[in-house]
Image (tube, rainbow, N blue to C red; front, side):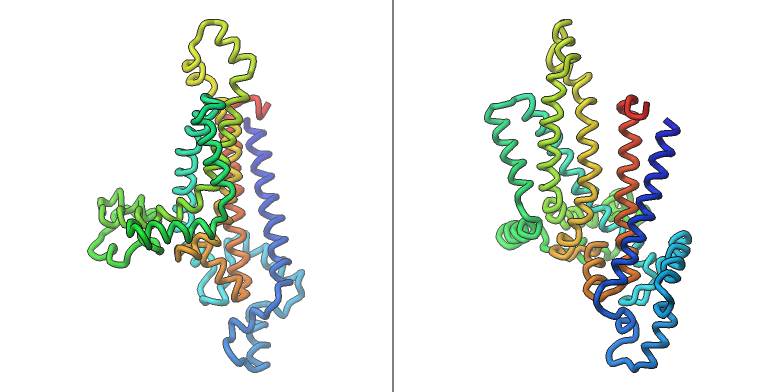
Length: 337
């Protein structure tokens, strides 16, 4: 187990190094002059030269790269050329917002997709199975940007049930005192007893979370169904039946556990898919997170911010999959043997 843990940890560090290096050189090849963004409109040649020297862009690329690796080790991602704030500060202010949205979306996808996949497998070739499989196909086929705007049109424009965009209404923070501060709005307001803020945040997160979760729900549903069907065809399942165990009892005691391994793989991969989906979803719903910050950084050629966001996305994705690998080893000890 310890050797398996170390191997995964080394692989995680190697992936981070490769991604950071590739990102650094790709960003350097992007069109546009980031120095002009730093100096402002109508700069003189002398101003550009001074700014280029202060930012380190006058050095050879290999020296910039070595300095970049050194700064990463100290968690120094530089200064955002657009906001003039440390990139690490900008990311930390927005990370909790994006992570809360992704976790809420993943929770919806798993809590709905997993039991529906089980029902579909247990009632194969019935009306329930056809309906659930059809729902999975729909979830996989709908474009995120189209789905987000349709949900806004229905639940805000027609029904007036949910807010159009944002993370919370401005008045919700009036006269509130959060005694619990984790950065996650729903958790903080819940444990602080600020119920008006909690329900307001819950209303605001529903539409973007549904938009992000529907595609992943389809993947979880289909994977669960396939894994359960494969498990029910295994020899041990038939052996249990021959010893007189009831079908439902075998499902509860053994089949669920065997189904969790492939579903966990999908959840880990889907987490990265959802992180990538925040670029569109946060722009559509004006969600103040990393996706919206990334779009603005790319449009303005804010190189330090682009690199910082990429590294944070990669680190989050790699860590989540690292934890899932450890979960594999706990669920099925054969994996690390």
